[in-house]
Amino acid sequence: MSADTRPAVIRQFPCLDDNFGVLFHVPESTSGPGGTIAFDVPDADPYKQVLKETGWTLTDILVTHHHWDHVQGLEKLKADTGARVTGPALSRDRIGGLDAVVEDGDEVTAAGIAFKAIGTPGHTLDQISWWAPELSFAHTGDTLFSLGCGRIFEGDPTMMWTSLEKLMRLLPPATDIYCGHEYTLSNARFARTVDPDNAALKERVAEVERLREQGLPTLPTTMARERATNPFLRAGDAAIRSRLHLEDASDAEVFAEIRRRKDTF
Ligand code: ZN
Ligand code: FE
View 1 (cartoon, protein in one colour):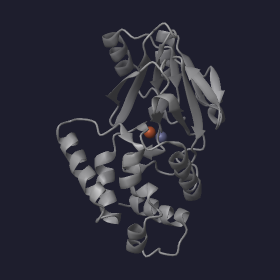
View 2: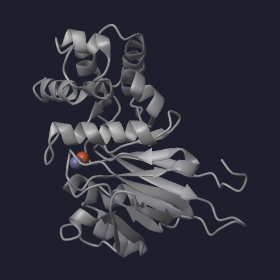
View 3: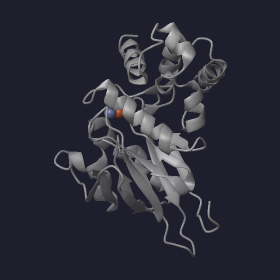
């Protein structure tokens, strides 16, 4: 991190049944005006509540994909705050209220911070993961979850695997990962069935059970932790391949089989 990097304050809170709201705030300072970013808007009211509590002024909304549980509250929150909305170019005709659109590889400055738009299609074709390299922050929408990944609705398994590989290639291990849903406990139950001897996974499952019992979130996670425990990132792992009898398959084929099993788990 450079010396003049202003730290962000991040608030994560539940929205709807199992969605997350995420607010990312950069305080005003001598090096810039700062600002506050909402990542997706499942529901406007919880966002307004947190903005009221903190006194933050919303400046930007960054959207990951077009599903209703990510954009439902967007126009209301925009109307109340005047925030600038940036979302996927592929959904320019179906997400209301967009002021700007991005494609894979584009860079956006929000709250004075540089964000990279990483195209990660598979769950939907339009899916964008947002990454701020300077602050070691990423929001992976419904692409990468803790111990899981999004269901493949619009793409195919090879497309989703390519997106996950891209996240593994781009995001350094220490990157904090925020995502769209608190699905970790059910993901953990499935993960154990394909990777039962993984000690790091056992530890993570115990931690997840403890957190959920206490009503606490299991996110954010980190790229390092997901690489060690998330079966959807571990298609190359010898123990998983042998368990699935797919020793000679490609990583994409192993991933497809893990995804297929999860869909019917
Ligand atoms: Zn979705
Ligand atoms: Fe979702």
